[in-house]
Length: 154
Image 1 (cartoon, rainbow, N blue to C red):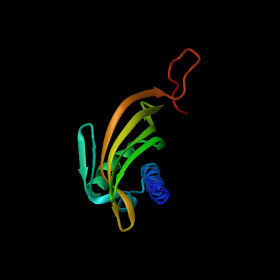
Image 2 (image 1 turned 90 degrees about the horizontal axis):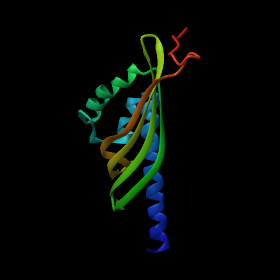
Image 3 (image 1 turned 180 degrees about the vertical axis):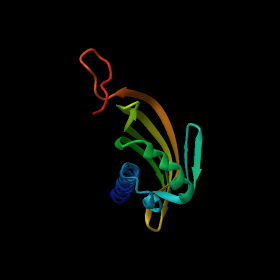
């Protein structure tokens, strides 16, 4: 691979990694007007028990995040295979979700591995298809009494 080919590949990898960060930011800020900057118009988001296709369906489906008072998606490892204007990739993520159960604050953590297909469009790379693979999850009270019982929120 020539140095110009290597530089072009590294630039594509940086843009795809930036796309993973934009997805996480969109989710945490619940800015679903940003969907056209993240997903292709006919893009699909697929996970356990759901499949959303297109921006409007995603906009409606992602409103489920409103059940959490806050989320924080941390993007970890990324790996991409680029072939011209298409690519595949894996993005690892730990997603934190804050919610309440019977007045007790809980933190739901998910270990996620996204398996993606990407398309390069005139405005840059977008996700064509994202498979949400849940690797693990924990859901625990955030505040605990000295004897280990959950403490009620004030």
